[in-house]
Length: 334
Ligand SMILES: Cc1cc2nc3c(=O)[nH]c(=O)nc-3n(C[C@H](O)[C@H](O)[C@H](O)COP(=O)(O)OP(=O)(O)OC[C@H]3O[C@@H](n4cnc5c(N)ncnc54)[C@H](O)[C@@H]3O)c2cc1C
Image 1 (cartoon, helix red, strand yellow):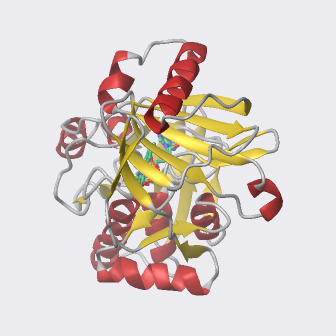
Image 2 (spheres, rainbow, N blue to C red):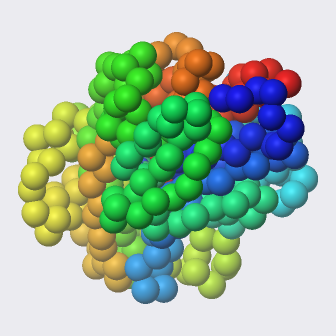
Image 3 (tube, rainbow, N blue to C red):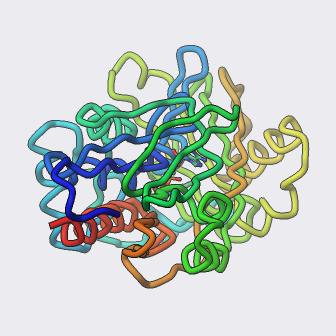
């Protein structure tokens, strides 16, 4: 990067998950940032599904906070009305037997749904949706040229930050082995998730459960923001990594029935008719290992990478990695 130039550096951020959007937001005023997102919406794994009139926070129902910097941000989100404490009762569950976890960890959730957090961050950024960046090319003058999967040229940038999940970093940043090989060292879990709206409540006393000895490892009641929607009870379930791996290539219908049966069995309740039933397979759900570094940045190449796979496989990890990436860039361009 030419550090003597007087213009604001042009930075491309690939990926509009929490890490990419946090980085882009923190750089506002310091650089001219363009975010590229391959999907039709921002948020990445922080996503919400809508099937007809039924909505689900598909992935995460809540998040925890341990870092003071993240706590400050969460307080700001609370003041802005987009985050609320999550006060659900979590238990451990085995074939209908409840174990009270007595876990007092404060938890938070996006209001009225998780994706509102990334929607809010994106509202302050330049984001180009439906644009999958597949190639970055280093020019003789040190700048980067970006190309999308349709062969389209997406512009010239002083710096590129790859804020995708680890398995995608390797492909995009292949030109820089120090970053691509670090990303390739990360293994990710597979996860089948089920989203079910029931004709009548399952009448369970708890809101969420870690499930033992079942195809399901986690289930939680999804509380909609409006009382009207809440009249219909919805549950989100996630299958265990082992079960998901075994059934990774199975048909959706088969998985859906298996997850529903497992839900009723784990809760020891009679089957209840569904009003809406759907499954989704996350082929790359969560990093199994992480780098134990906040982010990666090569100053000579002006290429960096961030995401939950650098720090910890959680919302907090993605945010802190995005912040750290912005901090490294600001120190570099000063
Ligand atoms: C099923 C599930 C349950 C979870 N539960 C919890 C929970 O309870 N609590 C918690 O704290 N965390 C939870 N997590 C983890 C949390 O969702 C992630 O840690 C966090 O969202 C990761 O953010 P990220 O920005 O690092 O990556 P991502 O959210 O994956 O963002 C990467 C973005 O890059 C985009 N992208 C990829 N390739 C390209 C390309 N070539 N060009 C342009 N864009 C591209 C993707 O579309 C995506 O939007 C869960 C995750 C899953 C999958």
